[in-house]
Length: 155
Image (cartoon, rainbow, N blue to C red; front, side, top):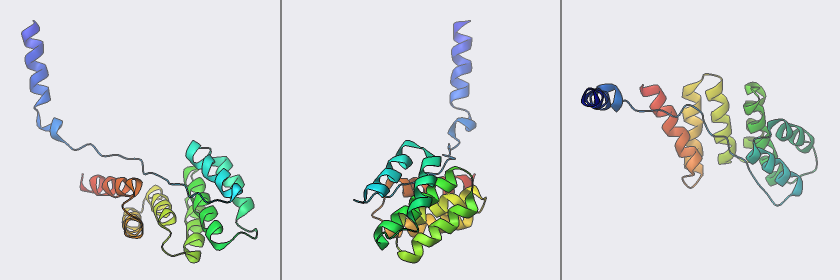
């Protein structure tokens, strides 16, 4: 009986299905931190996955007298918050606002890619992830998102 179980387990282990590539299906959002205390609080909420706090803090920040650098971060974080709470249109608009301030803001590009992915637009997601990768220094989250799109669309 034991040898039959072992043989069945071995057959299952070497079956063609066991060689199928496993794709990560959840893209990674990234936070943007600056020295500004309010933006740091928003970033901390991103890191903790406290998405409603990210949105609440961000909506209060983006129309204040922040520097362009801090507003870029606040918009990018707000984009992540909207995407995580399912408001992909608001997420894309928030990332677009960050990118109007700095067109190479890799976090905004990455987060907009996530919003596109969640909206079902894989082509736009991949384009944003590739732009984020070019604008960054090979960030792990961006590379994982590119691999996710490539793996998922190849399956």
